[in-house]
Amino acid sequence: MATLAVEVAGLRKVYKKREAVRGISLTVEEGEIFGLIGPDGAGKSSVMKILAGVLSFNSGKVRVLGRDYPKGAEDVKKDLAFMPQGIGLNLYMDLSVWENIEFFAHLRGISPSTRDERARRLLKATGLASFENRLVRHLSGGMQQKLGLCCALMSHPRLLILDEPTTGVDPLSRREFWDLLFEFVEEGMTVILSTSYMDEAERCHRIAFMIDGSIIFQGDPQE
Image (cartoon, rainbow, N blue to C red; front, side):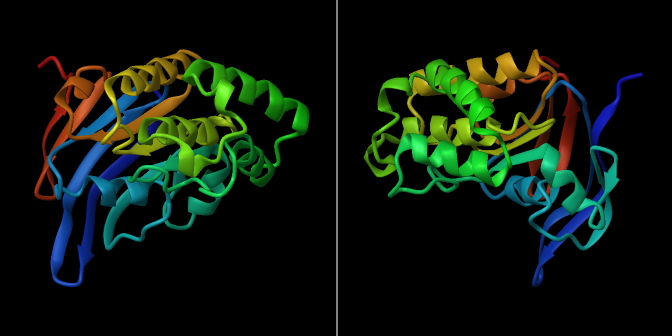
């Protein structure tokens, strides 16, 4: 039986009088890419933020990497990386590509030697190696998203949570983005991502389709 990275049961999230997440349940296995699919306003971002431990919830069970939320959320953060929705939102625009990587590595307590080794690999894989001295504000949207992924991957997390990571990104950058995800999943990482692109849903091992706060399908995307 597969080991579960994430278990969610009866999860509800209410904003004032609007119920954004309506008692959903889902499981994510270790070492898979799990896609949360659905249109804008379906409640995907709320679920992703809850799983990342940055948003509270009203009721239900949330267990991530063996820890029960909300009590265990802080313990999980060292093994988790979260990339929020919005181009460049997890980046510092007035810093260079390399300075952003250096900053995130420092936050995670990564040694300079390990940082340099990982950064070179990630920048080469994303085509950003020749732009390491460029300010982030001067990068295209696609390049900013790839840098955001590099920063998230610097800690080599067990669980990577990506909220709409390729929205507004050019086709080439999207392909490079996915190539890098598959590379890290082959090394044992678990990835949960949200998207409204059906072609990306087909790249996931399993998906959950969400509409109006409810999951209406969960399983193989080929079904």
